[in-house]
Structures are given as C-alpha cells and as structure tokens.
Image (cartoon, rainbow, N blue to C red; front, side, top):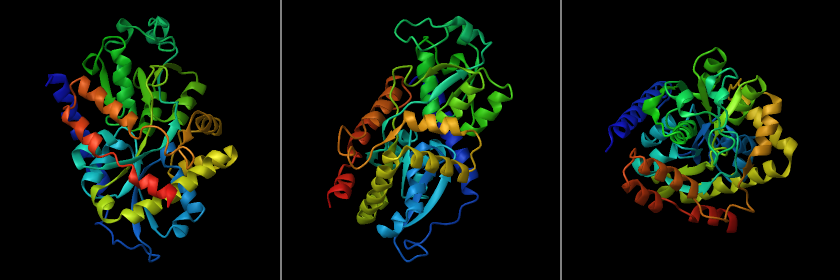
Length: 354
C-alpha cells in the first residue's frame, strides 16, 4: 500500500475516533428497546444537513405515532464520527454520506436506500483575489473548474476528513495531478470551515453543505470546484446496523414507511420543504445559512420518495465512492465485495408494497 494511502487511513481513523470520543462523553449507555411512549424505540443517527430533514417531518406530522415507533435522534457533526458511533452500537438507522464507506465494510452496516435523486451544492470556494482564481479555467474537459497546478500547490485546504468535502477535495486535486501531500489539508467540521474561512484562514474551503457554500458565494467568494462541476455525482444513503436489520426488521420497515411519507410531503410542496429545512437547521443550532441559500438548496436537491425509491440501482453512488478510494490505494479492494453483500433491497420493497 502507498505511504500516502497509509497516512490517509491512519489520519481518517484517528480523526474519527477523536471526534467520536468527544461526542461519546456526553452520551449515556444504550437505551431500552421501548421508548417513553411504549412503542419500539429507534435510535436514529442524524446530521444537521439536507439528508436528515425528513426526520423533522416525521416528528411534526406524528408519523412515528402512525407507524408505531419512538424516535431518539442522535446528532453528529459529520459522517466520520457517525460511522464510528455505529461501530460502537450507538445508533440503529440513519442517513449518511461518505461516512458510509467506513460503516459498511468495517462495521457491517446495511445500505437499504439512497436518500436523494439529484444533488448539487457541494462546492470548493476560494478568495476572489487568490492566484487560484486568477489562473482561471485551465482544464478543457472541466470548464467550471478553476485553477492550475502552480496556483494550488502548497495552499491550505479546509475540509472534513471522512465526509463528502474530503472526497471532493481529493478529486479536485487529482484534476491537476496533485494529491493531499501537495497541499496543507486541515480537518474541521463544516460550521467551523465557514467561520474559519470568513475569518481569513485557509486558501480553499471544501464545503459539503450547499447552504453554507452558497452563503460564501453571496459574500463574494468564488466557486473554483464542486462535485457537479468536476463531473462527479453526489448521493447519501440510509444505513441500518446489522443488529437492527436482523432483529428489528419490521420496525425498520415501519421507519421507512414514515420516511417516504415525509419525503412525499417535502417533494410535493416547495414552501413546505423550505420551512422544514429551515426549521431543522435552526433547531440543530446551525448559523451558516440564510433564507436565500435554503431555497436554492431545495431547488438543487430532491428526495427519493415513494414514486422513485424502487427505480435505479441502489447503492450505485456509494460503490463508486468506495471504488475511488480503492483505485487511489486508500482502501483495500475487499471492501467492494462487502459493499455488494451489504446492499439490501427488501426493506424498501416491503415498506412500499405491504
């Protein structure tokens, strides 16, 4: 294995474990299987981003009561610590992005659904006076990607190890025949990236949150890259722990019934979607968004709902993500087999047909 790949794995594991250990200090022991309302308890892992907004709808519309379960929502700052918490048995089911590439092969999580049908807004931002911006577009095949090898090399890149921003940053650098060893990559959570970049730290900000990225654009910062701009797709996935899938299958199905009813409501009414996204972000303590950014994020993204969930290849994006890390030597090819084994289509099928 390449030395750079080894450094990546060690760094990724260390960062995730450190983040999770800080998170776990405030957590109690594993709860009972029955919630305070006497219904089966589901501990749902969540992040304060678009992928988790249907949870707000489930609560507001009392879909947990309708489908006979209680929710215990456990918040995580990003996918890295969320994946490690799954390994520690701290949550049962939840939407996750790039952190799934660790949770599936390492902790035997089951991928049961893809969260969105379309996504955009994961962007890389630079300062308007940066020599990266001054270099302009130098890649014929990627007209919306800005920079060149000379202007990027040695720069400081802010991002989050283990989530989509890290993958996006790696891919951006690869377009210029560069790697993480050619820049100074600083790990921090998304909200910290926004604050640090506005305060003058770093040369490049890799943001997986569309509303935060769009707020930076509105403030005059320049988009130099992004998953869509780099011709890479983006999609989140619903994971279930091995134990919960095997021992609480019917409750898992009921959760997905509620999830798709929530997604149906969000997709059917743009104003309702805006209000729910804004409410969820506000309740989660986020400050890196404004109304205009939330509305644009809703325009960019669309949930898989009851009419689309059975279409297409489930887990295609996650398999592609893992393949990217296998190809650059950061993960062993055996994880591809684990990925194929752990994609389960039965939960969604039963949720929508029974």
